Amino acid sequence: MNALEIRHDLDTSVTVRDGGTELLRYVYQPDTVQLESPKPYIHPLRTRAGRAVSLFRPHDHVWHKGIAWSLPVVGDENFWGGPTFLRGEGYVQLPNNGTQLHRSFTEPDAAPDAPARLIESLDWVTEAGETVFEEQRAIAATILDAESPGVASGAWFLGFETRMRNVAGRAIPIGSPTTRGRENAGYGGLFWRGPRSFTGGDVLAPGVSGGDELRGIRAPWMGFSGRHDGSGGASTLVMVDDPGNVQHPPQWFARTAEFACLCPAPFFSEEHTVEPDTTMVLRYGVVIADGASDPERAAHLAESGTAALADLLGPS
Image 1: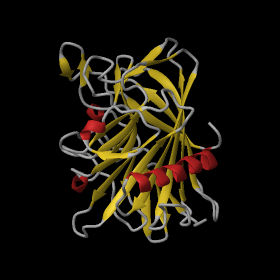
Image 2 (image 1 turned 135 degrees about the horizontal axis):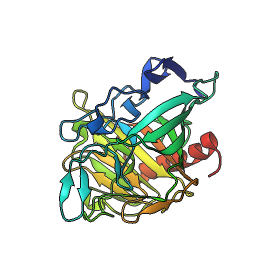
Image 3 (image 1 turned 90 degrees about the vertical axis):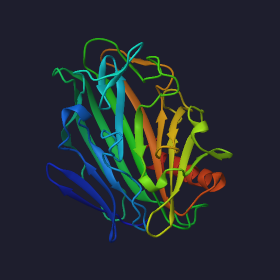
Image 4 (image 1 turned 180 degrees about the horizontal axis):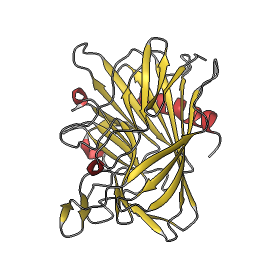
């Protein structure tokens, strides 16, 4: 196992490095305006060769920030950013952009030859000031075994787990613009926005490679392979859904024609209600690899990611 270095810049961010390469920066106290639903995010995100595979605050959707846990429909609240979709009205800007507020870390360290790991406590606070969820979040990173199929050119793994306890005293339905009336717009969850140069890249799923027509399919994993400006090199990102998650295998929100994004969307077409004082648990893995991929290689990367998810965060 390759050792990773973790650096904590107090009150700002945590950085994970692989030798001379900064693999990720987790910004947990952003200076985001309320309109963009302030939340922690991971950016930049890089391959082991140092290629950037994330985009921050693009002009078309300024609330997209690398990889972030973002939910557009939390009851009547918006923890995604920007306007809210209303049935019969379309997108309307409302005073409902909530904040994911960092409270503390309980494990911001990495021991020698061990995965980098963070355990974080957060509050989900509405724009009106009500705390509706208390969250415990785990983020872990490790280098994948180069002997594993598909990994030889270099890959690492990012694990994400959220435990969200409803403290509002009432049931809260979590959904998407699709559950509120907009067709095939089921985004919401662990959302990745790729670099501009990935536009027009390949969306990968079990046994298939394509484009926007794959949005909404159900699969245990989905990937994206794109190219970089400058070097002309390629990178691949594969996201895996834990078998214990709501709606597994999930529908996926994916785009490539206008911009690159992926999101395993557990609330794509069906709302999930979290009852008072109960906890919703969701877990995901992300494999970041150098080199282009086809569905066969992406499947191998997904297999390695699924195994790493269980190793780093325990059984679901």
